[in-house]
Image (tube, rainbow, N blue to C red; front, side, top):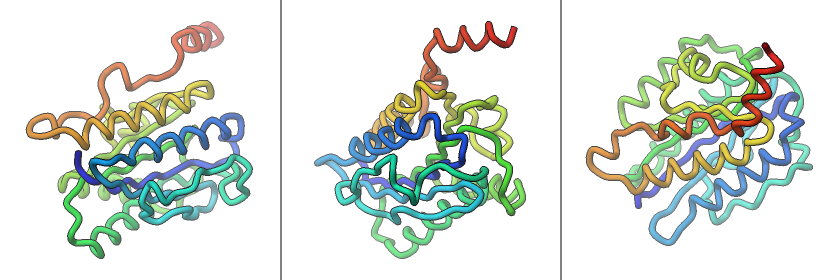
Length: 220
């Protein structure tokens, strides 16, 4: 098991309100599952709506208190400045790595949202180039999305569609659990396994099958 630094870019825009309690619980389970006796993990949590902010900057998992859904700092509001916040999380992670040259573990970036970008100031090419540059030196990215064509949207941002995941209001907790399991597998992998996609085929859509069928019927 390798040490890990994990940057999480969390959507707190107004449309997240309907699933916010589950999203907060999912994050808490995610950060708790990454701490173990074999290796250490640090998490940076940045959040965004029209604006963006930071809750934790490279805190060890065991030092991070649970989030609460009533915390006004992260309570849903505003629009969706995903690109700007994802770029900030990448830069924050880079700065931590530059300051901690002893670190030889894995680097992950997790972006979770429930809609389309509509408030960033940065150009799309900036995030695309940043992801490409970091993937070339071994960083891993996972994109989780609801209410969009996830694979297509992932590609437009610069994420690998094979490491993108679709969830909905009833499965945001499952999305966090699945992401955590994928990262734990990656942290334990070696050799050729270490270069495989983080997500298996059946992990790219964690919506309940009955919910998916109902949604198709409503649209038909």
